[in-house]
Image (tube, rainbow, N blue to C red):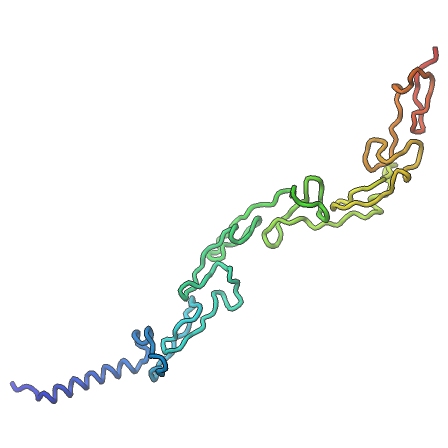
Length: 242
């Protein structure tokens, strides 16, 4: 059998190559091209369709046609850079947060990735190291605390008692001197000059901040007999005279 002329074989090979090249160029975005891209200054192949950002893409990525795509930050352009989702190799990767990494010391938070709920503890009944000024329930032991909106223990808001309520007489007990307002402050209910009555002094009856008088007892009679003043408007009996 006779072989085809050499010129015919060459022509056939060139035609096949042309068809292959045309097929590769027709999509304009072959894997080789999308990976490497055109040389600097070279226009993209005719008919190339640029790729869009994948759902989990971030940062700047190649569009497969010689250009670049800005796929933004993970979670959107206004997302917190400290959020659990970070851009790693142009892919959004979520690392679950902990109570410590989130700065939470009480209450509950989610891990930021899977929706799992983390319990970050409770607040102590008081803050022994806090100043009691302006804190509700303030005392020498500290201020009453609660879990605030930022999952941190903060003092309970406080409304101080009014002076008129603190200094008014109740059950024949008259307040005097400096008295706490319940929020770490004090109000002035007067000095010992406001305590009226025989022998009345501020705290004299043994209760701080209350006018009172400590009466004398029979131990102070020192040989006296009969009834003697007790120093508070009353009398004490010192026995009969011999």
